[in-house]
Structures are given as C-alpha cells and as structure tokens.
Length: 196
Image (cartoon, rainbow, N blue to C red; front, side, top):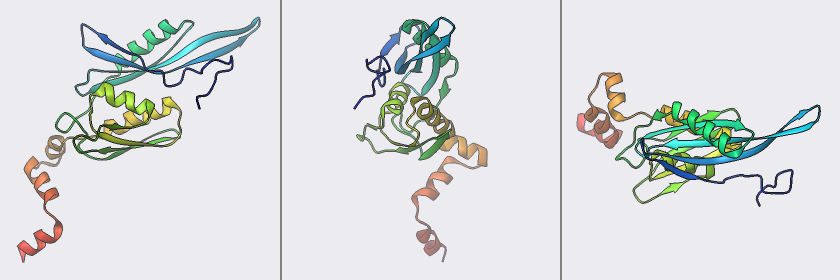
C-alpha cells in the first residue's frame, strides 16, 4: 500500500521519470519527490525535494538531490548535482559486477551480487533506478535496514565505489590477471594434489 502525503494525495514515492539528453547521451531517472514544509510567521511555506539518478548506461552513474518551490526546478537542480558527482563502475562483460559487495550509509545497508546472463535486475525501486542508468543488465541486490530512498541510493553508491576489476587488483598487487583468475578457478585441494 502506498503511503499518502499529509494533504491526502500520493506521497510521490517511486515515481520514475526517464529523459534522454541529446548532447551527452545521459539518462536520468526521478527516484523520489517529497513535499517539504517550512513553518514561518505567516504559516507554512511548501517546497519540493527531488532525488535523481543520472547515467550513460555504459558504466557511469551519479546521483543528486535538489530542493525548490516548484517540482521542475527541484528536478533540474538534482540533475545538475547528479552530473557533477558521476562515478565509473567496472563491469564484467558489460552486463554485471565482477564480484559481490556490500555497502552501508547511515542505517541503510545493501548487498550487491553478480549474476549469470539472463538473470535481469533483481532489486528494489531506488536501487533499480541506479542499475538501469548504470547499464548493468544482470544483478541481484538486497536492501537491509533503512528503506529511506536517500539512504538506499547512497549505500548503493558506496558499494559500487568498492567494486574493482581484475585488472586493477592485479596492478595493485603486482601480478598478472591470469594469475588471479587461474587461482580462483582451481580448487585448493587440486593444487595440493598436483604439488604432491
């Protein structure tokens, strides 16, 4: 059941909006929009707070929040902030993550798992928007703790920033990519039997 706002209308949760910008081929999705009130001497002043996720569907994604007196202006501000905070995420075969990863932000906690081809995006609303704009086609995600969209998106980004490709790990450790992948594919018992 959707929550209703104080004025009796829908609270604006999980309203996705997708737009493509011609020049930079970015897709933005509106994750959530809230009506917020500031109490002043004459009564209440209402404004709108928007959370937007922007990505190029090729491994770059960013998020931003904006607040304004009108909805379109709040969305525009959030989109501009999202473009400034974009990060690059390494993807395996251009469709999934290289490894499982966890992310935390405040009371929000998420688990992201790589998936086989054809799995699709198995994730909740705010996380689904991040994966769709990022361009990941196969992923399994679970949100634990806070269901606040802001915390979920921030925890997802914290997890995505921890993702590493085999090439970057091999460079950091001074090894070859084949050494890392070869060790992962061969069970430990087999290696001991070969050495004996």
